[in-house]
Length: 338
Image (cartoon, rainbow, N blue to C red; front, side, top):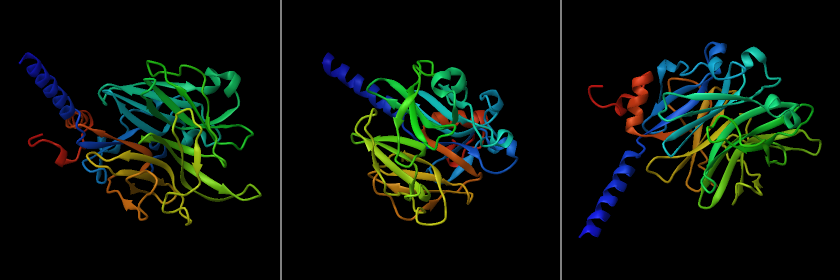
């Protein structure tokens, strides 16, 4: 009887833990594409009950001032990750309104235990790694992937060096405090024609790395671009490029970038969303296997104009916490009387 009772207690606690961690909504981290230029390149949050109809938190104002977390005064391309009760954001340290597109110093690493209080540290690649990155021009669109085999967080990003045409993915494991790297970043993957805006997800033993790729002719001139992917059975590679274009606009004059893939709560479907940056739109396609995607795009309903962002699932308790801190959560996610 004691053994059975103990088993039942463990089963109950396990089910309670699962219930407490149940994802009931979605959080979208992004930067803005309209309004005053000096306020666009700042971190913002939005919340949705269904990952399609979104409401901006904090009246679509920054939740944290970029001047308090970055070296440049601006941030772009925020990527958010949740794992084991913690949250991580990495972003491009870049303020184009003030400094232009010539170069940027590096990236910003942020971490939190509650989604509302964040600690941040900016990494200047030239200062931290002068031997290898003295001539770095761009450090773009970082993302974080949890490596469960090593219990570490891999941060990866696109690098371009001054005077070179290569756009390559570099990576390094974050230190335990998520304030920097364990060691100097190294080459992770070199796409045939270069790539930016990498986004990694794992499914059924395969690592899928989505990115904006392109095709060039014999003269080295770009003749096509859009969302592609490479796959690997190991984070260490090798990565196999699939030169197929996944987005619905690759054969048109409409350009896209900043793709991000996430799994829907309580569903086997995945969403591939991307930024139609020259059109001022944000759209998505669906997939169940991460190889084949719906041909027609779908639209988001939103009260903001996001640029290159990312999405995670959140719990009811986290929804309430975000509402208390910034307000703006959709009414259907709030308890009556709140």
